[in-house]
Length: 124
Image (cartoon, rainbow, N blue to C red; front, side):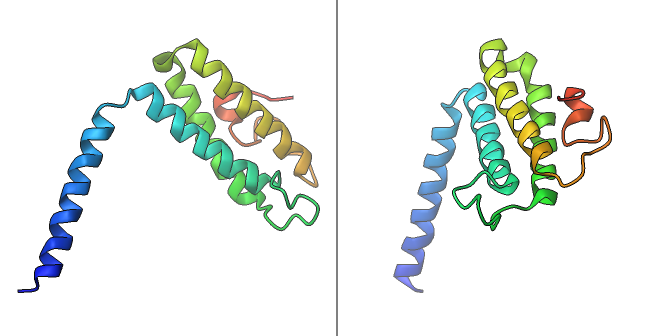
């Protein structure tokens, strides 16, 4: 039996238990908001709003579309649960991403076909 290996497994189990205790203390609104912020950050990079905006190196509009649509679904579904104060800032961020996406497209999407519009309605 490898004592070092057993210690590693025990340490990992303790870390997992601590993570569960930590997450149990976090309010749902904070977890939802954090997930939205991660989606927003990733979408911003994929839209091409990262520092390397000049070359478009980070731009991937197909990926941005998926992220923005997922964000729109989450924000729309979570808004009644997290309250207007939190939802308003998430909606503002989402709208900014939708507009940036529209500007990055070589040809505009058909009305209602832009990312997230099935959840948010037409963004203009």
